[in-house]
Length: 390
Ligand SMILES: Nc1ncnc2c1ncn2[C@@H]1O[C@H](COP(=O)(O)OP(=O)(O)OP(=O)(O)O)[C@@H](O)[C@H]1O
Ligand SMILES: [Mg+2]
Image (cartoon, rainbow, N blue to C red):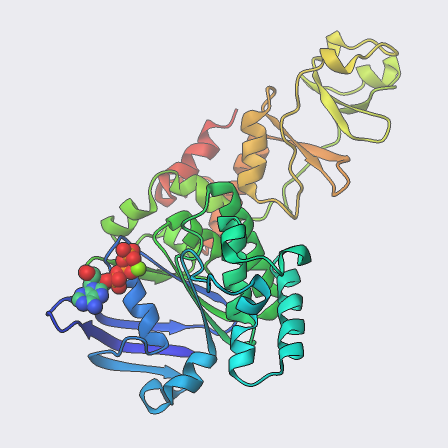
C-alpha cells in the first residue's frame, strides 16, 4: 500500500503545489486524484515515483520509506502513462511497448513476444505492430502508452490525464478497457484527471483536491455524490448529483411484473385478461415490439409498426437503477422494459416501483430503512424522484 503522510511540496520559487496531503492508496484498486488545473495533481503523482521529491512529510510503499529506496528500482515497479502517450516517434509500436523489458535485460525475442501479448490485452490489432506512432489515431496511441507501462508487469500504474486528449467516444472505450485490465491484472492504479465524471466512473477511491494543493475530500464515488464535504466539492461535482448516484445502486432487486406482457400471437382472451392501461407486445420469442392500449389491439392482427416505441430496455442485475429510471422516463407509457442477456422480456416496472426501489436503496446506503417520514433528510434530487412518480 502507498501511504502519503502530511506531504508538502514547495517548489524553489515558493509555490506550494501540495499542502500537507495525507492519503492511503489501497492496493489493487484505482485511486483517482481529481481537481481544477494547478491544484497539485501531477506533483502528487510525481512524488510517488520520485520524479519530484517532497519538501516535507513521508511517502511509504508497503511500510517502507520511498526515500530509502533506489530510484531506478522504484520507477521500474511503477508504470507511467501520460497524456498523448509520450511515445518514441522513431520506434515501431512493438518496440515502443518492448522498451522497458529490453531495458531490464530481457532478450529481443522475449520482449517482443511480451509486447504482442500486451497489444492484444489493450485491444490493439496485431497488424499495427510494425507501424510508427504517427500512423496511429490518438486513441490507439493512448492504448500503446498503457501497454508500454504494463510491459514489465509493474504492480503500480501511475496515469496522468491519459485519456484527456481523445474524443468522448474513444475516451469511454479507453476507460472501459482500463476497468477490464484492472479487473484482470489487479494493479494498484493512481489516476489523475480533471474530469469528475471520469473520476466517478473509474475510482474505487476519489481524492478531490482544491487549489493550493489541499485535499478537499477523500471518499468512494458514491459517498462523494451523497455527502460532499463542502460547497467546493458540491460545486465541483456539478448538477444531477442525485441522479448520478443512482448508478451505484443495482437494479437487481427491482420488482418486475409480467402481467401487462402479451405475445404478438395472443388470443382475444389473452389480450383481454390483463387489467392494465398499456400492454407490452413481444414477438413469439419474447423480444419487445412495443406498447399499446388494450383497445387498440385485435387478436391475430397486431402490426408492430402501429405500436408505441418501448424505448431502451434495461438488464436487471447488469444495469443500475439509473438505467432503469432512464428507461421509464424515456418510455411513452412511463413503464420500463426489463430484458435478459438475450433481449427477451423478463418483465416491466412502473416509475412508481422504481421510485420505491430508489428509496429502499437510499435507506440501505444511509444505514436506515426506507419508509414514510424519512424523506426529509434524503438528498433532495432523489426524494424528488420518488415523489414525482405517478
Ligand atoms: N517546477 C515547478 N516550479 C514551480 N512551480 C511549479 C512547478 N511545477 C508545478 N508548479 C506549480 O505547482 C502547482 C501545481 O502544479 P501541478 O502541475 O501539480 O498541477 P495539476 O493539478 O497537475 O494541474 P493541471 O490540471 O493543469 O495539469 C501549480 O501552481 C504549478 O504552477
Ligand atoms: Mg497536471
